[in-house]
Structure formats: C-alpha cells, structure tokens
Length: 415
Image (cartoon, rainbow, N blue to C red):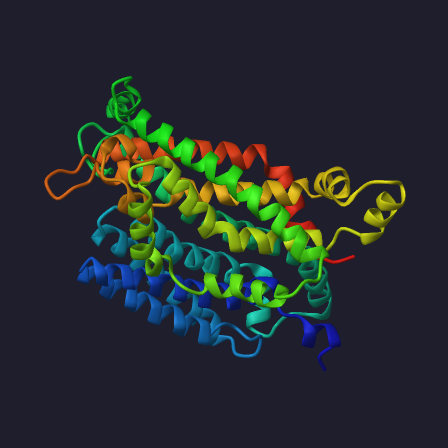
C-alpha cells in the first residue's frame, strides 16, 4: 500500500524538465527559421531532428510508474547531445550558433544528470519508499524557489543579450578598420580612426550636432510653453468646445505624419522657412503638441483642487496659483514631457530631410543618413557617429531618471 507522500511526490527536476523542454523546442524552432533564412540547410535539418527528439523526450518523461521511460529518456538525451555537437560543427561558428548549441546541449546535460540521480531513479522505477518520498517532498520545497530564481535570471540574461547584441555589433563596426560590418577582425585590430574622423574640428558632425541641439531645445521650450498652459486649461476649466478640442487632439494622433508632409512643405515654402531651424522647431512643436497636452492634463487632474482653493483664499490670483502651486508640484510630469519633446525632435528624420536641402542645415539623423549612399557606404563612420549621437540621450535618461519614474507613475492614479 502506497502512502500519501509516495503518491504526491514528483521530483522537482522532472517538473522543471516538463517546463524546460517545450521552451527549448520553441527556441530551437526560432533558430531553425534563422537557418532557413541564411540557407544553412544541413544545420536546419539537424535542428529540426533535434526539435523532434525533444518532443519525444517530453512525451516519455518518467511518471513514477513505468521504469522503461527512464532508460528511454536518458537515451534520447544522449542523442540530442550528439546532435548538438554535430550541429555546432556544421554551423557557421557565429554567436547565434553557439547560442543554439547551448539551448540544445544544456537541457540534455540536465536530463542526464537529474534523471540518473539516485532519488529520481528510484522514483522513476516506482521503487521509492515512504521515507525517501517524504525527504523528496521536503527537498522540493527547498529547491523550487532556487530553480525559479535561476529560471528568472536565465530569462533576464536572454533579454539582456537581445538588447545588448545590436549595441555590441555597432560598437564592433565603429572600432573596426575600414568599412567592415563587424565580426571579421580581432579585438587587437580595433582602432579609433572613425571616432577621430567624426570628432575632427572640420567634420560636418559638429554642424549637424549644433543644428540638432538648436532644433531639439527650441522644440522643447516652445512645445512646453504651449502645452503646459493648454493642459492646465483643459484640466481645470469648463468652456465651450472643450470636449471637441480634446477629441481633435486624439484624432490628429491617428494619422501618420507623412500625410501632412506636403502641406507642411507648402506652408514652410510660403513663409520662407525652408532650410531654417525655426521651420523645424515650429513643425516639431505643433506635431508633438497633442500628445504633450494629454500627458500633462493627466497629471494636472491628479493635483488636488483644494490646494488651489486655499491659495485663492490666501489672496493669490489664478496665474499665481498656477505658477506657485500647481507648476512646482507638476515638475516630474513636465520633465517627462520635456524629454519626450526633445527626443522626438532629436530623432526625427522625414521632416528634416524634406525641409533642409543644404548640408549646413542638416540635423544628425539626416547627416548620418548621408554617410550611406548608393555610391559609397562609410559604415565605420556611420557606426561611430551613431554611438556619439546616442550618448546625449543616455545621459539625459540617467540625469532625469528620478523625475521620469515619478512623472510616469504619478499621473497613472487619481487621488
């Protein structure tokens, strides 16, 4: 007669394998898609065979009743491990091939290790005694949090790898000599020639940087000047056309910016604002205004009206209430909106390309695009300039991190 502990006990390792094997199969299927795109047919066949073997391995995982499943799972794990070695040998030896080999070999190694352990082996054969089952249940309780923590870190490491891979790649291109797209030179051959070329005093990079700073800062200042009072008015006052205006702001955001490209160009041409920073500042400010107003209005709605009423009783007029009470409390939201306006202008390409035809008025996105043309590709210079362009954005996020977190979270809950 089996005890309750014997019936309830399932090794934590087997439970984890039931979760790990389907994930391994899905990950390797994604690798198979990549191998198909790069027409690596031998590796693709090996990967598909391995995925099928993983599926069979999942179906025959031990259940504590049939002892043959243990030997079959160990055999399958050995076969998959062999396929992983063959797959890596047949692959292109790139980072993705190493990653795929790890996702094939690691579950197999863990299966061989865990299923062959004494406690899991006795459970797989149905020979576990009550004392061992009770020990196993206690052991599961200790191992479960550890395995969950390891699984969470594995997921985070993969996410980190996906995020850092483009950055590492473009850094490799920027430090590689010539116009190599990376991966073909050793670290000892890295050079800073591309950064030196971009940072040279006679380089056009500084002209593009100046134009982008002028346009981005001008857009931020002008955008906030219009958005802050407009958002406060929509939040605090009830006037004719209020609802229609707010709906119109939302409606404008539904249309892609390219629709207004021709009307914008005609307006700027008639006003003589082509090839000027002022034209871009006006265009960017108007384009970003609806979203800025909505962001600030949501925060102003959370500021208690009682504070304003108390200030009015103390003798403040409406402008003083806004300037001395509401605006200081809303600085986090203003910081978020300012950063959004700055980044929108800093990264915009289409309007800047349309309105500016002179290299002296190019902003950074247009200037960087000019490095890659149909007649020549300066990949190294392009990569170095891209990294330099990203640095101000990173610095802004680090400096305003506290305000960003507070501003993005404060406006999400009323009260």
